[in-house]
Length: 90
Picture 1 (cartoon, rainbow, N blue to C red):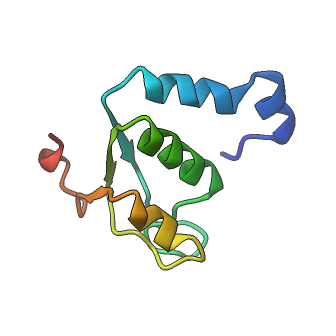
Picture 2: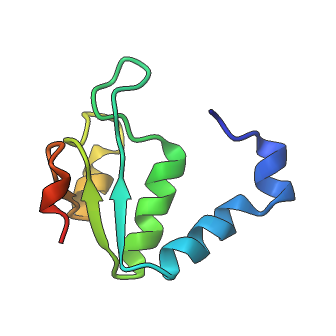
C-alpha cells in the first residue's frame, strides 16, 4: 500500500521513520519483486536506508540490490545481502 503525500505530511511519517531507525540497532530492508523489478527498492526505502547509514546502523537487504538508477547509492551504503536467509541476521 502506498502512503499518500497528505498522510506523510499530516502524520510526519518521514521523521517518524527516522526516529524508529534511530532507536534500533539494525535495519532490515525487505525488498521483494515489485513493479517488474526483482528486489525492488523504492524512494521511501532509499531514504530510510540513508537514515540508517548516517546513524551507523547495520543494514541488511533480504534480497539482492536491483539494477536501478540509484543502485550505486544503495551499494555505497554496504548493506549485507541475505539472499532470503533470515538466519544470517546478526
